[in-house]
Structures are given as structure tokens and as C-alpha cells.
Amino acid sequence: MKRIKVISVFGTRPEAIKMAPLVKELEKSEFIESKVAVTAQHREMLDQVLSLFGIRPDYDLDIMKERQTLSEITCNALKGLEKVFLKERPDLVLVHGDTTTTFAGALAAFYSHIKVGHVEAGLRTHNKWLPFPEEMNRKLTGAIADLHFAPTQTAKKNLILEGVKEENIFVTGNTVIDALKTTVQRDYIFKNDVLNKLDYKNNKVVLVTAHRRENWGKPLEQICIALRQLSQEKDIYIIYPVHLNPAVWETAHSILQGLKNVILLPPLDTDELHNLMAKCFLVLTDSGGLQEEAPSLGKPVLVLRNETERPEAVEAGTVKVIGTEIEDIIRETKILLDIKEEYLKMANAVNPYGDGFASKRIVEGILYYFGIKKEKPEEFIPGRIPKNI
Ligand code: UD1
Ligand code: UDP
Image 1 (cartoon, protein in one colour):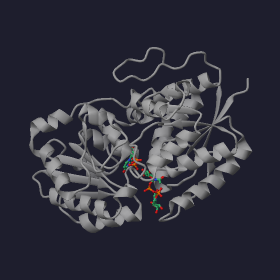
Image 2 (tube, protein in one colour):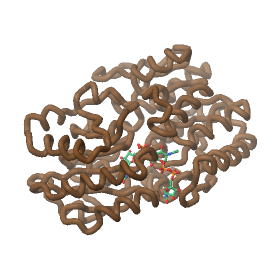
Image 3 (cartoon, helix red, strand yellow):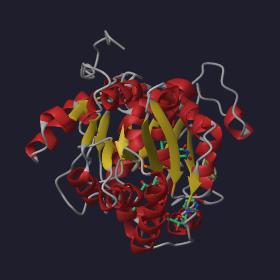
């Protein structure tokens, strides 16, 4: 029997976290030959995830440079992946989400006449500058893709409005919830002992991440100034694992280093981050992934952006988009720190993004597309127990 050859392509931390459960699922299928090619658009932050999930890439383009530009990433990924695809001639290339690796991977596959599957397809703000360049990366990848693995019904609707045929869309849930199910443990002991010593019951531990390109410069400075002021609140601890990008690292450290009640850390291993999120009081973030993870752990999220392409948890009331103005960040955070009813309104565990079976549905979708399975996998519907998975 000839197996379907699938190459999964990724390059940054969030792509790796969200592709890891899928790579494991592809490896389990007797009908699929699975290979992995990483661009290493990120280096240390990618390697952390590869090691946590035990993934050894078949190809590693090792393209990361300090303060790399978008054009450099695009050109180097495109050229490197072309060689991989010409050598391997896969039946399908899988890319994930909205990074420059995603777009370059889809384009390189298209140039080589290879089918493309887009995981986490269809998220939109409908503003090409926000998030930049991710909204456009995602749209361009969607224009190339043959199979669209949309995490939610909203994402499916966005694709249909853009003319994608319904038969090529699979609503799967987000694979990040698959990953979260394997990392969060009740009696988890942190490798970083600072996190073991925090008093999560009597203090209010606020987890912060902020790194987005559109927040570099003034918005990130404002975020850090707001955190500096908030660090004087009673019983608060602000934990900020800082992204390795020098544009982020330098700003965060120059404003926040040495402050009482602020703990700046290097990027945490994903199991550490997930378990810290499970224990913390509140999340402040501009990250996409954290907006999906925190609601499933019942943690309120204040989003440090002006728009989000993930409206589902906002609609469910557990996520609020608050922008990057100093007074807005302080006001909204203090409401949650000080007013119990307001906190409880947002601290509901909701799972609009997945049920832990997204990777299985994606593999079933691939098998259906290539004619091996007769039935399209059942769509992910929040709150519904899957029948045939
Ligand atoms: C990239 C993605 C963004 C995603 C983010 C996740 C694009 C355009 N951006 O942004 O969508 O949200 O990853 O974190 O694809 N660096 C290191 N070591 C690392 C990683 C980064 O030193 O392991 C430094 C390097 O100096 C690098 C810089 O960070 O040049 C920026 O990395 P880059 O991938 O270009 O941008 P991100 O802001 O990480
Ligand atoms: N994450 C991590 N360590 C950290 C910060 C984040 O493992 O120190 C994880 C987080 O749980 C989520 C993902 O990285 O799964 C989000 O990645 P990032 O914020 O870099 O990118 P985005 O989601 O904004 O694209």
C-alpha cells in the first residue's frame, strides 16, 4: 500500500506547540508517512518545544538571525523549503496559522505543485494591519490552501465568505487544546523553583506575556509602565516570561527589572507556562495562543491589543480586549483584582476553541480528502461529546 506522504512545516514556538500533537497523530496512522521540516525562524524557543514533545525534525533549515527582517525570513524559508519539497515530493504539505514560515511554506509548496493543508485556518480581524503581518500571512496562506482546518464555526464562516468551498473546510477545534491536555497536571512541580515558592492562594499572581510586532516601541513601553504601577497593588505578583526578541527583551527589562513583586523570566518551557497559567489569578497578554488556552483553564484574560482574530472567548465573556493605553490597562486590571463579582463573571472555564480531538479530526480529514476514509469527520461543536472519534 502506498502511504500518503505528509510534510509538516513550522518554525516558531506557537506553531511548534500547536503542530506537535498533530505530528504525533500523523505518526500513528498506518496510511501516512509523516516527515517534519522546521525553518527554525525561532531557534531556542523552537528547540524548547521540540524537546518537550520529543520531535526530531527530518529537515532543519536553521534560518534564524538576530533582529531578522520579514523579507529575510520569507526568502530563506522559501529557498530552503523548495529544496526539501523537490527532494521529498510529498503528497501534502501542512502549515500552521499565520507566521512568515506559514506563508513561505504554503508558497514553496504551491510553486512545487504540491497540495497544501492549512491548520488553524480562517481566523480574521478583517484589518490587514492588525495583527501585522499575521492577518495577511493567514489570508495569503488561505488563498493557496487546498484543505482548510478551521478551529471554529466562526473561522469556517470567514472562509466561506471568501469563496472557499465548504467541502474543503474541516471544523476541527484548535490543536492547542490537544497540547494543553497533555501538559497540565494537578501536582506539577516547576523546574524553576521561583514558581514553586509563590503563594498562589494568598497572592494575586498575574501572568503577563507581550511580544507582538505591532506593540513594539511605544505600546510595549506603555504596557510595561502600567505593569510598573500595578506592581504596587496589595498582594500582587507579576510574572512576565519575556520573549527573546531584543526589541521586546530590552524594553521589558529597562522598565521592569529590579521591581519588587515583578518577576521577569526567560521564555518558559511550555509545560511550565501551562501549569503556571492553571495556577495564576489572571492573564494579561497580546499572544494569540494564550487567548485560546486561558479560557479552558477558567482564567480571565485581558488582551493587550486593539483587535482580536479570536472573538469566541470575548463573546463567552472570559476574554476582554483592552488595548495598550496605560490608564486602560490599570483600570481594567484593578477591576479584576478588587471586585470579586467582576472577577467571577470572567473566571468561567469555557472551551470554544477545542475538545482535545483536533489532531485526530485533521488526520481523518486528510484520509477523507485522499479517498481512504469514506466519511468526512464530524465537526467540532463546543460542548458536544464527539461520537465517532
Ligand atoms: C514570530 C511571528 C509571530 C508569532 C511569534 C511567536 C512572524 C512574522 N511573526 O514573531 O506571528 O506570534 O513569532 O513568538 O512570523 N529570537 C531569538 N530566539 C528565538 C526566537 C526569537 O533570539 O528562539 C529573536 C531573534 O533576534 C529574532 C527575533 O527574536 O530575530 C524575532 O523573531 P521573529 O520570528 O522574526 O519574530 P517574532 O516577534 O518572534
Ligand atoms: N508559551 C511558552 N512559554 C512562554 C510563553 C508562551 O511556552 O514563556 C506558549 C504559550 O503557552 C502558547 C504559545 O507559547 O502556547 C504562544 O506563543 P507566542 O505567544 O509566542 O505566540 P502567539 O500565540 O502570539 O502567536
